[in-house]
Amino acid sequence: MTINPKDIESELSYIYLHAVASLAGFTCSLPTRLEDNHGIDVTIRNSDKLAPDSKIYDFSVDIQLKATIKQLEIINNKIAYSFRGIKQYDKLRSEFAGNPKIVILLMLPENKEEWLHITKEQLVLKNAAYWVSLYRAPESENTTSQTIYIPTNNLLTVTSLKEMMIKISIEENIKYEQL
Image 1 (cartoon, rainbow, N blue to C red):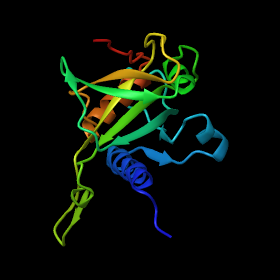
Image 2 (image 1 turned 90 degrees about the horizontal axis):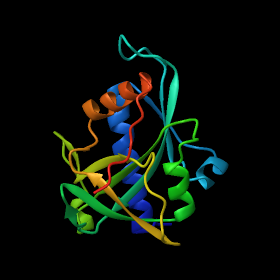
Image 3 (image 1 turned 120 degrees about the horizontal axis):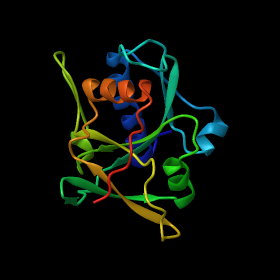
């Protein structure tokens, strides 16, 4: 049995996040079937004091993973991505969620042969992943999809993930930035 390209894209987005989270010192876990039905693809967990002013030490962040091979439009240094599923969009933007929720978008090359390159010296996964919080994003006027804008400076790296987790640990809400 082989898996389809969309499933491969999904798996590569998980691998990218898992590698970054592991190097940052956080655990990554897959959701139960029921959690997955609620749009949680991965949970990142921290169990240490991350900063002198941390107010919470033991917390989780729920992640919705996306991947695309499309060349997306960039407007005002933000990637325009059509997020399908208004019900899920509303859950991700909710002010009443217990755990912070983040969307991570892996942007892959169009050519599948360029996605992953392995040699004895290196493992290269192209291109890059970007993150955005939809907390307090505007309500959608659409019924099927909503364009979200992901800042191009929100490249998902070990450093950016640590910075995000520190903000959460000091109870700083990471709000959505509109165009």
